[in-house]
Length: 160
Image (cartoon, rainbow, N blue to C red; front, side, top):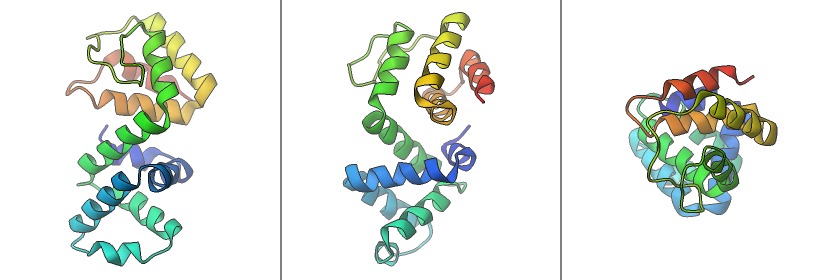
């Protein structure tokens, strides 16, 4: 699944929260995403920047769902998860005994996962963070490889 498809399957509330978080906490990333998105549409950034914050976010969500926004969307989702949901990333990596930097970034991801351990990990994440956020995290995690992990694909399919 590409980033624009991930955005398209998210609830509007969660998709909006991605850009709302970036607008409040990661202003440089938010501005860079806005500039990239306006450039794709042959617009000047000021055209969108003059809108209210809610209107900007709504516009950016709409753009993130479009084909051609995969690279921008992937970067936005990765940053949102790394900075805004570090605890979830750490829980995932710790539960699967994957070494990481303490902030949710791992260098050595295994080529395959033990099915039962992954199932337990996903159940823990779902109970702690909710099905939708867990699904989005796993979908973004899948973007780390050109060939998705089949075990993670199966785990995503089990989320309600």
